[in-house]
Amino acid sequence: MRNCIIASTSTIHGSQPLAYLKDALIELYSDVDEILFIPYARPGGISHDEYTIGINNIFKKINKKIVSIHMFKSTQDAFNNVQGIYTGGGNTFLLVDQLYRNNVITPLKEAILSGAPYLGTSAGSNICGLTMQTTNDMPITYPPNFKTLGIFPFNINAHYLDPDPNSTHKGETRETRIKEFHNLNSQPVVGLREGSWLRIRDEEITLEGDLSARIFEQNKAPYELDSGNSLSTLN
Amino acid sequence: MRNCIIASTSTIHGSQPLAYLKDALIELYSDVDEILFIPYARPGGISHDEYTIGINNIFKKINKKIVSIHMFKSTQDAFNNVQGIYTGGGNTFLLVDQLYRNNVITPLKEAILSGAPYLGTSAGSNICGLTMQTTNDMPITYPPNFKTLGIFPFNINAHYLDPDPNSTHKGETRETRIKEFHNLNSQPVVGLREGSWLRIRDEEITLEGDLSARIFEQNKAPYELDSGNSLSTLN
Image 1: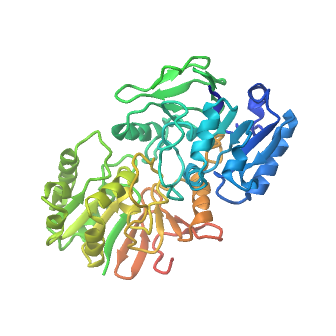
Image 2: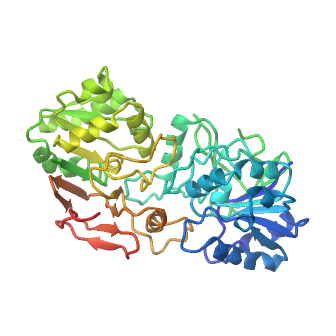
Image 3: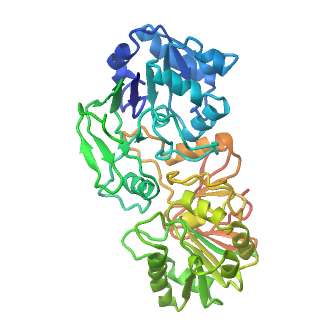
């Protein structure tokens, strides 16, 4: 049982955080009063408390209460009777490091696979793939492992960006980086553009939002998948 | 004793690889006939042999012979009587992983600190900082450690890119990423734009090339350093 929204970004240009997902979140969390928030990805600037208050201000508009994992005495307490879950964005290295160090990997995976409604945005989406190895983030900390939750049998590249045909920059494009990944790794990568998300319901995975996604499979030319189509057989 | 060129990129737009550095390389390698090449960063597409042949074709124009580390029976053999060294670009995670696995970290550091003329481009420059944690590359492999050679007491951000004021993209800018790095780490970061390099001669470190560099120090506003100026006291 899976019931997830895996979003490229929390925020799209010119809009408030999560505003573009409002209807989708009302539906995702329809049976949920309280959402467990995981703020670990945020690399500073604001505290976990401040981050949580900001997220609670967003969710109270759809009549949901936020409780953050850092407010509990233990990880086990946080997952006792968990209803819904939201993992926010920031830095994926920091998020994965904290998930391992606070022993959150296993209970989080079990809760999602048991059907707890889950929202991930950006880093919170990356961790649902097989590994975090297609993140765009800087390695600001050294996590004990790059393996992530494996909620689906591929990887996410959040905030996917098309190459700029007019660029004179010689740094690698996103597409080049993912091709390098496939020189050493075999799982597919879904390049999710900002404004796109995956809707996962049990065995079904569908691309949602206005845009197409770019799919990268090893030893295959990358291709576009239009919104509304299935990724259920991608592996 | 240090004698290094630490370049942002091997190639600038509209130019052949290393062409913009030709005069600087003639000077760097003036007492050297043979250069030990380290091709480990290249994540595939071409073999180490092919990469080495391409690099040799460039260096023979300035009358230098390239021998690649992968052509030796052992790392120790490669560093016996080493004259000059060049570490090329590619993926920094892969490069650091291979440096550790092939026991190259210590002999490479010792050779550079003993005064062997060293050229690094891109990933080959990143590894001369304290850590590889300000790379832009994707974590396509998991190195045993993020610590690097520490030839100077700061980090490099190669291919430094200024924020695009017209961007509607919500992924982090390079400046934001380096700020996140400084929430967890204290060493300065030198944002080296393409076409810039550091020239290190013993205790002196000077910025070379046409462009300024952007310097990031923890708890300080980022600032520009003009070409020709010293970074010898940055730490």
